[in-house]
Structure formats: structure tokens, C-alpha cells
Length: 256
Image (tube, rainbow, N blue to C red):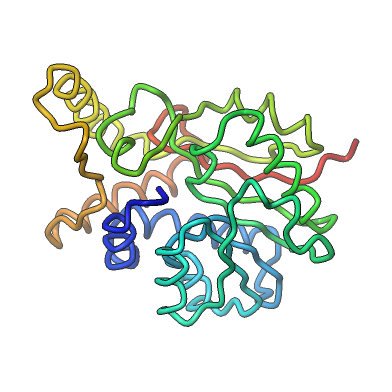
């Protein structure tokens, strides 16, 4: 999303409120607590931290050893406004970043969609080297080409994923998936027709592909709360769901 300063500004303003971000941030913390219990001293790297919403949520949950990197100067500036010291780094340069430091957890949300397989393999390999032996990589990713729409154009995403892509790439760099799920399954029946309609409008020229708008906007309080509760209830009722616009992964070093 480098170069879309207006999108970073929207993200900065809405991450703490918008139902989707709230649910994602809670998923990350729950994954950390499942692995590390109530420890708050673990070293966490947010790789592709955007405007720092995830870092801010972790800080408010008591985590203290936080580090962030992002390839956008706009994103880094917003992180600094939140009081975080974040490094400006192209993710392709991750193999050369602080090679002597390792982390208990790496969080990488909605970043892999900007890289092709060769680049992504190098990035994942670097993350494997940055993880401690018992560390985990937590990653959320946009899923299924069916959900491609104006949002992807607005944030300059170049691809969407299925689980099979990571099942193919991760073993090549010494990583393995320990848990995964698509989400939000219930809301996908609302999201999918909207995205399909966007696709049709773009093809027919009814929407301006040169000036796309993302889905990052705050609906009224009742709608936002309802969407949050639906996604949250789904998470509590179903350990995994087979379909959704996002794919959430927990990854660790392979034993091999």
C-alpha cells in the first residue's frame, strides 16, 4: 500500500474502532496467550506494522517488548505519532535486518499479498531465522480470488491466498502451519456479493479503477457493533471455518 497516504490516514484513525481490526487484533492476542500464557515480556516483531494499530493494541494488553518495521514512510510517521520506534524497511530487505536478534513472535498481517512467490519465499525464510526455537509466526492474509474487489485496488494488493499456497511455500523454508482458519465465514455471505458487484462494475467501467476506495470506513455504531459481534460469536462457536475473506495462520519452525 506504499504511496496511498490517504489509506494510511484512514487506517490510523479507524483501527481501534472498526469491527474487522478489532476482531483481528483480538485473534492475535489470543494466539499469543495460547502459546505463551500470561507472559508479557516476550519479544514481538510486527513485520509490516502499518500505522501501529496492532502494536498499540498489544501495548494496551500489557506487552512491553515490541518492535515494528514497515516499508512506508507514511506508516512509520503514524507509528511514531503513537509513540513507537519503528524502522523503515522494505520487506524484501528483511534477510539483512538485525540478523543477530530473534523474537518469540512475529506478527505479519495482510502484508504477503504485495509479493510474488520468489519474494515471499525469501521473506518467509528471513522470518524463520528471526524466530526463536519455540517462537511463532502469526499471519492474517486476504483470501480467495472470489473476494477480489475495489478494496484490493485501493490498497494495491496484488494477490489473494488459499491455504494451499502456504502449505506449498512454508516447508521450503523450514516452517509449518500449526493452526489455520478462514474467517469471517458468516459475514462472507454479505461480503462476497458486494465484492462480486464491484468486480462487475469495474469491468463495465461504472467504477473508476484509477481512484478506488477501500473498505476502511466506519459504519454507524450499531452496524459496527453488530458486525463485530457476529465475527466474534463465530470465532467462539467454531474452531475453524472453511471459507471467508481472510486466512489466519499460526506457524512455527519445523522439527525437520
